[in-house]
Length: 467
Image (cartoon, rainbow, N blue to C red):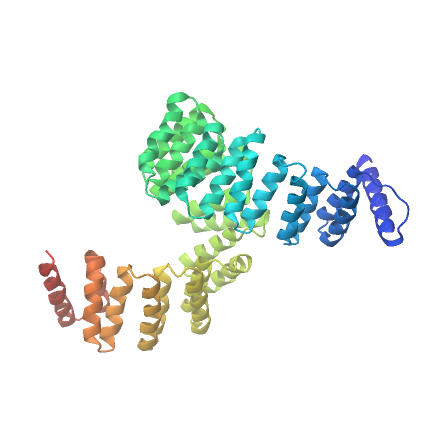
């Protein structure tokens, strides 16, 4: 009843406001009323009307912080970023140290990749806010957007010093340290938090994340175990423990961790999807599909679950069924190269060569650094007898991945098939230089003994010359 009365009041307010706009009727709206009107239009995604309300409101309350924030948000949703920034700057002339306006200005600059301006705004705000960790985190993200990982690291560390519970800052810090190759050397940084407070579940949790990134899975599990021993309902630690067990191939243990996460947090599309993935790895395909479908029932837009069903069906070589579910995933995430690659393979397996080629073309544009796309796509042409086109596709792949030995070895196969032996030898030398041990892949393509002997002679000569 109370809710119904509130809706009735709101409808009456909007009626009055729209009558005021249309007929210039004599209604007085105070600042709070304008905010309510703007919020109503925003909630209903009527941004043009929200903007009209903003313009009228600002005529009466030009320097209201709350109205400025709301109106800047409307401009942002309409992608009128310059107008939003100009509006904020006008009010900052009167109230130059208002942290909310400075933070909003910084976030809009970041949104449009004007990172230097964003950093300047955030730095002005940092002295006037209580939650300094969030400001330092935002500054870190801006530096990261500029690929300035060192300064990003400095600010993530400042954020963590202010608040060790800032999980986002800890995660991004580990990412940046990994990028510049200093993750391992930073272990002492994370361990100092444990020295300060050995009963901090978050310190152990984040140490677990770092060890996982370093591939030291045993120590990662140990750290997560300490975290959940301190806080038995620490769902994030159980979830990440499950991910680490998956990396270790300990799928049964991963299931246990994911199920414990579900017990604490309740069901979610994400956790059902991870349970499905664990069953998939254990080749319990019926259970995998069951949990992926549970995920889609909770959230029909959770594309990872549709993809999971498709990949599980592909693993059982149920290609026609797989295509149906993979395409569902693709419709929800059209720019996902992995999805395009999966569709391409399934289409190829059903004999839909044209569809497979189209999908490989899309996949190569989305993820050109994935060598398997180029290998599989070129092999499709090779198997069809169009070796020239197979070579052409592979050349494109090599130009995108000049350090990938597998592409060079496959190029050797195609060039030999075309009788272009001199080019094949040059490519073979490059492949051997990049990864000598991988040369055995050639023998799969040349089962005849005399061809293998000829290749072995060249490879052995290379080894002697470079030993």
